[in-house]
Image (cartoon, rainbow, N blue to C red; front, side, top):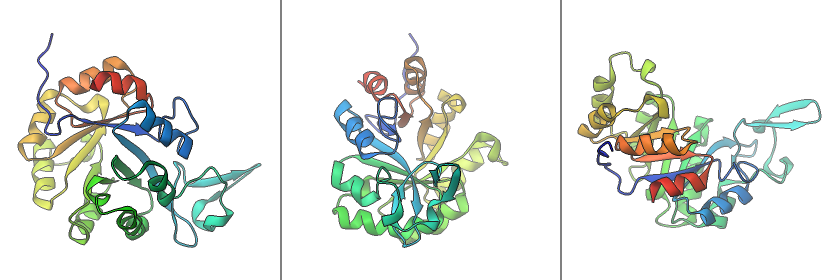
Length: 235
C-alpha cells in the first residue's frame, strides 16, 4: 500500500460538483440538498448575473427554450426558469455551515456574491471559495475581501514559468488554492504547492480509484458528481 501524504486541509473537503448531479438535475436546489444529505462537506456551482443584477447558479449561463438559446444576462431573475436558483436560495436551503465553491463565469458577479454571502450569515464568507481561471483577476479581488478564499482554476500547461514559480507567485499574491484536473496531480506536485502554503484541489474525481489516488497525493479538496463514492473515499 502506498503511503498517503498529509493534506494541509484535514479532512479534505468533499465538494459535490453542481450538487449530487449523478442522482438529481444539476445545479438545482434538489441536487444541492441531496448532496448535503449524502454527506458532502462542500457544494460547487457556477455563478452568472441576471440583467437585474442577481447572482444565479447555472453551468452554461444560457437559457434554452425550444430551438433558441439566450444568455442569462439578458433575462431578469423573474424571467428565468424556476429550476435555476439564486445564490441566496442556496443559502436558504442548506445554511452556511458547508464549504461553498463558486466558479465566477462572470467576473462582474463578485460584488453581488460577497453581498449575498454576508447577508446569509457571519460565517458564510469564511466558508466561501471563489474560483477563476485568471490569476490577475484573483489578485485584484484579494484586497477587496480578505475573509473569502480564492482559488486559481488552471492547468499545468498554463504555468509558463513552471509549477514552482507559479506556486511562489500564488503565495506572494495571497491566493489560497490551486485547482487542477485530477490527472495532473502527483504527490510531488501537491508537496510543492504545500511548501508555499497553497492548498491543492482536484476536480473531475468520478471513480473510487481516482478519488483514492488523489487522496494519496495529499490533496486538500476533491470535486465529484458521485457524492456517495466521494464520501466513502473520504471516510
